[in-house]
Image 1 (cartoon, rainbow, N blue to C red):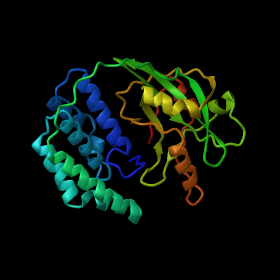
Image 2: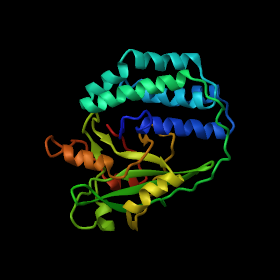
Image 3: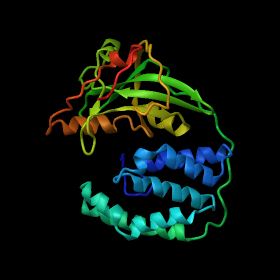
Image 4: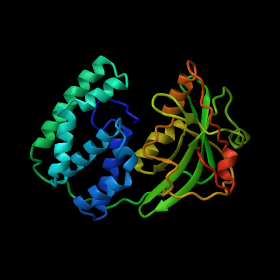
Length: 281
């Protein structure tokens, strides 16, 4: 789910869906078209009982912002909130009592907002062209909460219309000394099995934006560049999409491994940079 707070927008799914909705609107698409497109493009999230609420909240808020609220979407969100479904999910995910109370207040205010009339529709903005932040093959390191160095490898760098995107594979590097380029070449991909994750490689498509660069730049150090012979595209179903908080998942995974076994699945960086096919499972 990638949640970092109790606010409606404080999770990766909401942030990504709302951002894509805005981008498509600024590109000239109308609200009904965008809604249908996003529903068809995110079936995994729409059908995820733990994460679908965040998808519908983002769609409803975007429609409200553009003064084109759809009754079906609104009623779906209203039912989610009034039925207690969203709070039940938070409880099942072991949220503490204080956060659940905060979330309940947030949900009530969100519904009140959607029931109100927005004075003026949000206007289309001129599309800003961004380029990929990383070059293909770049390796970068960052500090983990345990004081060790972690690291990631850039598997792809693409320009898709006005948006630059990178495919980033976070590694299992977790060492006291700063990693070398050789360490990256011999590294394994970070596999997630903490919380609800089940042997999921942490390989993610991330778009470049001003905010993205500001959030990433202070926390990384580029180490070197390795040759990536394989070509990747964003249409692949194998990879995650969305926000990228550099240390969040490595910190959570390594902390989890202190009390439970690490994942049995292993994927090497070498297998990802050679021009050959592979599967997660």
